[in-house]
Length: 174
Image (cartoon, rainbow, N blue to C red; front, side, top):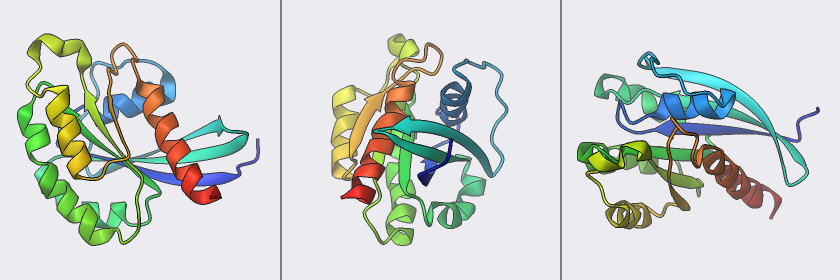
């Protein structure tokens, strides 16, 4: 399959929000419980077919620990799309959104398609962030989409990457 487009997608947010688990689920359709913490950044590839186009996604899974945040500006540059991920059971993971977006706004001087993703919906009984509150924050950051997902069950995982890819393609083709 020849590639029509290659897109760089950056996944970012606080540590322990499920970024690596989400990426692993998308790539393999498997849930892996014992994933190691990302150190710096992980780079993964997946080819998909979307609207008759062969698209290669370069997925940059960025470590959420504050000690790695100084690396983030160099990884967000040149991105075609982004996913901001928070954990629905951890209010702090959404409270730090301004810290992340300060970097994005400083480094990205173009309209970057972005989706807000709330992970760990299987833990709904531990939910600390209402869907309404998260949607308000997403809207305030001009996000292009909002999805809650569960990497454990696979709920909405592919939908996230499909929506983001459609948004990027729309920008490219129009």
